Amino acid sequence: MKNKNDIVQLSHLVARLFLVIASVFLAGKSYAQQDPMYTQYMENMMAVNPAYAGSRDVLSLMAVSRDQWVTMADAPDTRTFALHSPITNTNMGLGLSFIYDRIGPIRQTGLYFDYSYTLRFSNRRNLALGLKAGVNFYEAGLTDLLTVDPDDPVFANDINRNFLPNFGVGAFYHTDRYYIGLAIPKLIKNAINKNDFSVEHLNREEIHLFFMAGYVFDVNRIVKFKPSVLTRIVSNSPMSFDINGTFMFYDRLWLGAMFRMGDSFGGLFHVQVTDQLKIGYSYDLPISRLGYYNKGTHEVMVSLDFDFKRGRVRSPRYF
Image (cartoon, rainbow, N blue to C red; front, side, top):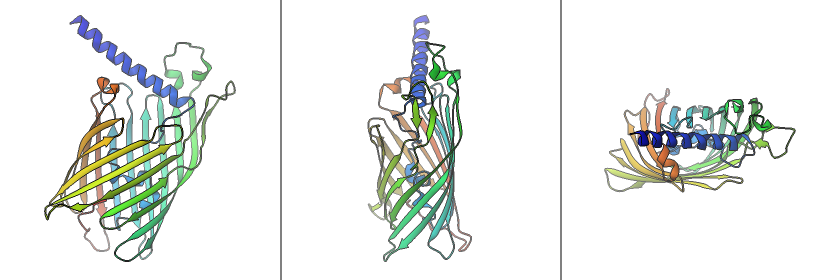
């Protein structure tokens, strides 16, 4: 029993060491993705693409809670809230998104406003162009980390950047059955930390390029199938590629699976409780050695649609 306890303690120590290394890596010269990722990205496109604002033709509210690498000390967690709506009798849409993201000693809080303008074509084809503008608040409690050298100047001070303004752009082409999107939510590479002793310890907000696409197929009169993909490209970081496949039954229940290249796999479901309310849940497991030290990632999504003009919301909505 003692040996078993030693193994458990060692595994927790390795897990904490991994997160400390990851946190230090982000706090110094960063080559990693800084924006949070989502398994249910197809329901959370407002977080990255401003052109999505108003595309549902109703006032839409969405909340996502993501707890990554459960049971792992100081593991990442993300909270997102977004709302968006078209402007009546125009081709414009407005949106607002709030994002809180934490990993170990690093915390980011963002507040962004979105604007879109939609060019409408025949056969319900639409091309929306969007702008995103807002601010990010960044902090890293480096002095709380345990280091080999207590006098290491890299960890001598915490990082508190209370105002990192930014703006982004996006495009979203969609019909009733498919969509294609491209977005860069942050175009300014704000300096997060700058130390006088070494130019190597200069950390900036990296530019993220997102590509997204999805299509809805009729299998029969009861079942539909929707494959979707999301690609993230970040400078000096491996490309991230997500692929999802979900089946929809009776226009009410989505069941599907996901795979994130080189990272994780999992399952998800969405329930259209009413025409206005949708609830979703996903669970994914790492495919790397990191999976030995945690019990996967949980993500919960809730969305609400309101149409004050017509009184009813068109259902189902595929994206």
